[in-house]
Length: 218
Image 1 (cartoon, rainbow, N blue to C red):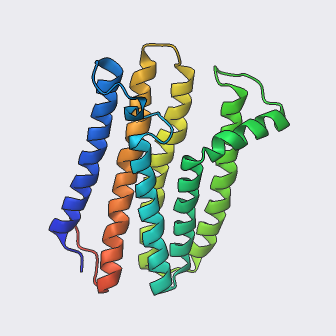
Image 2: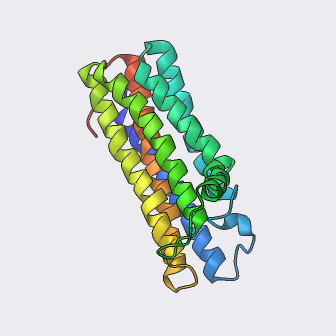
């Protein structure tokens, strides 16, 4: 059974935590407080990054639980997708592969973007197409209610991608300008907030499927 109050409280906790990390980043960047670089949003494996890893892990784990109990292929694919995002973020997979791809394809600087940026974009497109094909095939053979869930997740993932790819590219083009810090906060903060909403959505789905009841509208 999906308890509306419990669901809202979970989302509120996630959002409050995100806002706290964003605030700590601002204080770290513009004041003498919290000078440890772990408070920075763009610090690899910093405090906010680790929290983001946890959310991705929770989403992957919840979808895996749903697949084991409901035997729906789309749940397994979504679990694998978020597991990939977790591995990619925590081990900087697309950054490392981006360098290899950029060197192999001999990318050059263009539009204030480095060869590494284009290499990362190539890796993103390749992995995105792979999961898009898997989701598309499974979607065709899924029930209508599962298709609705899939469409919701695609929209949220598209928003997550907007911050992670489009805003990230703008951030790369504004290096060493007054806009760099602001766009960096929009990029990392946007990713965190969207992932929190995804985590909350899948939590509600898990509770609904556990109780075999229709999803209540918040």
